[in-house]
Length: 108
Image (cartoon, rainbow, N blue to C red; front, side, top):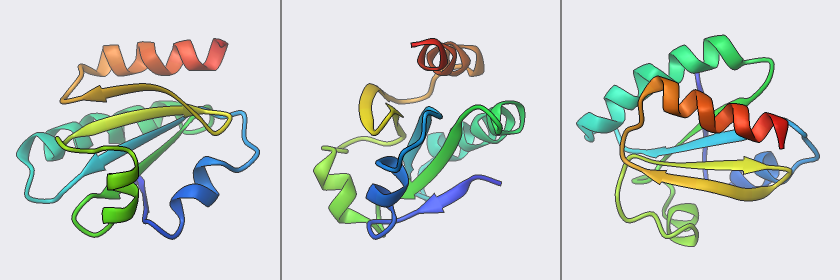
């Protein structure tokens, strides 16, 4: 199961000293595309759990972080490495395209 984060834990988890890439899924339970993406992210997490972290942030319950990152549409995925935002994608990506983004972060 994917780890839920919030405004209080976001910075601690994203900016910790970790070389693992991190994918943060900005979502809401009422969002049908978010629920569809969640299924893909669960599958990716089961394959990549030792190599990457996949975290979820509910935008309805966490307005500070959502605002800080300019989240206006969901789902939005932000990819981090070493505490730096490396990529952002608004909307759904295929499982293969998400893998490609994560693979690129692992070798960079």
